[in-house]
Amino acid sequence: GENVEQHPSTLSVQEGDSAVIKCTYSDSASNYFPWYKQELGKGPQLIIDIRSNVGEKKDQRIAVTLNKTAKHFSLHITETQPEDSAVYFCAAINNAGGTSYGKLTFGQGTILTVHP
Amino acid sequence: EAEVAQSPRYKITEKSQAVAFWCDPISGHATLYWYRQILGQGPELLVQFQDESVVDDSQLPKDRFSAERLKGVDSTLKIQPAELGDSAMYLCASSFVDSGDTQYFGPGTRLTVL
Image (cartoon, rainbow over the protein chains, first blue to last red):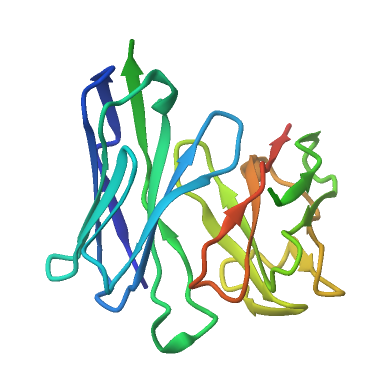
């Protein structure tokens, strides 16, 4: 099955700096890669996602890049703010062929702390 | 904005007792998922429903866990009997058509087994 590795496990930055979180996946057929932000005591919230036919996607201060050859994808947060502090999870799924039964596999999470 | 609803938010129980969690997905979403999240880890899928049918329960400990979605809308996850190792966050998610679509998560139920 799919295996997703996420690094770093913790990341501490100063307000205004950029933050980068990287993930690698094992199943070359994976074709959908969402990123979730989870605040303490809450469920994961989707912040951005990318599909395998796209190399990069941006939404305001957040961007995701995908390298299918190397099987890795990254989350980039620019101009970080204290409210960006949370746990971030990457995930991958193989939904090739339109099957409904692909399973979303999550990375281990990155605790991001943005210091004012 | 439509959200996935879960209840209760917190549950404390003693081992060997039965517990049940309820989930109401976003209206119109055909696929419903139950995940378990152990502290410090990512969510892991327990069971996936497509409408009222189970399509993946390979990671569900069937000797003690059961899940149903009788009318293809809301769902219940049950644990009987609960064990100490079941302490975790239980998350429900839903997606519009299938697992290739965006999955939206509820707030979760934090279970503590004493």
